[in-house]
Length: 351
Image 1 (spheres, helix red, strand yellow):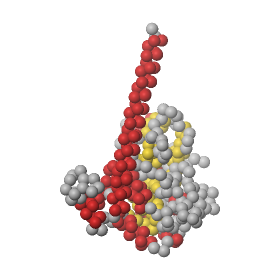
Image 2 (cartoon, rainbow, N blue to C red):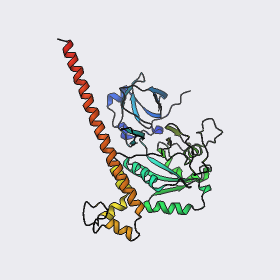
Image 3 (spheres, rainbow, N blue to C red):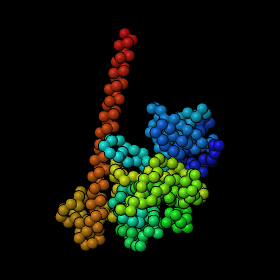
């Protein structure tokens, strides 16, 4: 049986309401994409749940999007996003891939074992800041770690004000610190690599166990390298007992950034602040004289690893952004060429 929801329960707010004309308010109704599959989207609305079959004339959409449907349940238009998470598609593909949209808070999930990686967390922070959502680093598997404070200290070197929660995803009492972000109408996304405990965290937040038929599948870690196995295979919105919406995402070991310069600058604001003291305004912090950033490294106030991570992400996002821009230009030129050919063919037929 289809379940109906109020729009505020689904995260509807003034930002989306003001995008609708009076005519649209009377004619169409908004739905929120809750699952994304190869050939269809699942959605939730005040009218109930439904399926939207993907057509070639639709814009690219993702879980969390708000769209308008007509009274026949047909797609009309995609509403402007309040936040949008995307990355360069994995492998050699030259296009961007949407991850989620309209997210209030991002739980960046990392495990307290050998798979803990500061540079990977910085990537997630950059993409979260770029989307102007609030990041919370959630450290899982606390029951398997003997030095939790050591990991927290490493994160504090990234950002003294970073929100950090330490949990054992199997123990619901350790998740109390996450409740304030899970209120009614708020959307939380989980980002993290495969095997950090996201599916277990989803199940515990939902009050489920692995025995429940609606629980997300979970798998143990590999003993040889402490890395987990990939379990989540699609993006999906889950309702939480507290009223919030939780968006689980497949684990991503490869997260290439594109068009993310603002997010990187925010994530590495300590380096940006130090750079104000460099002799040259265009200092690259790569051996120039009177470089305040390199001086901070020499004095032990900044880790060399962090500067190297900053340089790597800046280069990566610049290259990927340029590559994607070139592809978009080629696509526009190709579309224009095909349109001109079609117009010429029509003109010949009409002679």
